[in-house]
Amino acid sequence: MGDPVVRCASCGQANRLPPLATGKKAVCGKCKEPLEALRLRSPVTLTDATFDATVVSGQSLLVDFWAAWCGPCRTIAPIIEAMARERDDVTFAKLNVDENPVSASRFRISGIPTMILFKDGVEKGRVVGGVGRRELEAAISRHLG
Image (cartoon, rainbow, N blue to C red):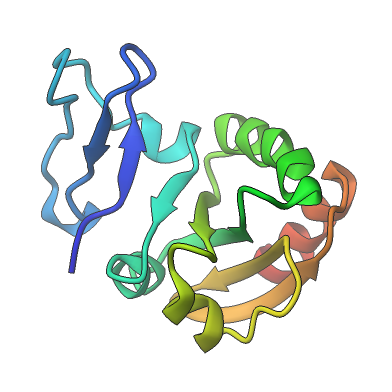
């Protein structure tokens, strides 16, 4: 399975992160800046290939199932990005349903955006629709707290 992909905050280069369990330090392949802090500061991009490895990593995780054409998905994206920068107790991830239909089908995603909350590899709750930050914070507290 592939590793999660994040963009470097310094230069914008897409980088694959080694699994947390390996203990390897992540650096940008282009500018060599450390990427370790990005695990908590930027949503991780998931694919069908990386989904299972990321979800079972034992962390509290919010996965945003989205699509580029979806207006509410674009509206909620900055909220999720801000929460990812501010919170260190939850990892935020995004999965494009058009590019990753296997995962979208597996979790019966019928409306987007859908945010699924996972803890220790188990789905704990869902939030469907273009909700605000307050609703997302409440869902995190309720399902992952």
